[in-house]
Image (cartoon, rainbow, N blue to C red):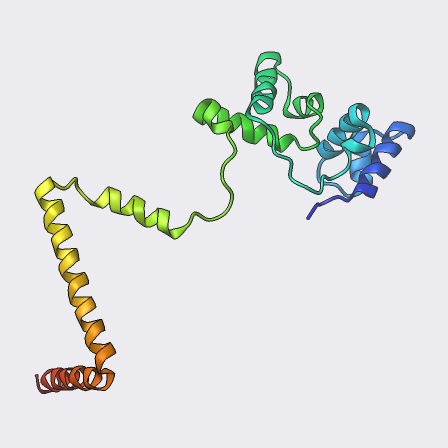
Length: 187
């Protein structure tokens, strides 16, 4: 949601350009806490026309080279965020703020686009496993493989027994469960 709509911006810019009030007076007249947005709108309008005041409906992705050019322009010329945004036909100076911060912290890598959304759970568990597990020796890997094969074999035997006689399988496991629960109750 935008704080100021397009019509309001156009009204104030035209009133500034063709009227007799300055930035601060206009901001005060329309109960704006600061005249800075008005200054930005006027400078954007002077360079880009009405396009400079419009809010873009879709998020545009900028290339790393474009971001780097904008950051380098700002650092080399000493231009403000707003001046840099106007120079590169951006109507949101906060993009430059973000790019400059990322560039200072991570260098050019910080200007790469980041994947959006929440990472999948499978990747998260793989990372956790890699951190928690130490490298197994060949012998330990073989022991682990043997254990997995034993478990698979036992599972397949139970599955075969269940397919042959499902009722007997349920009765057998039902009795085990009842006898185990009785032991726990008596403790």
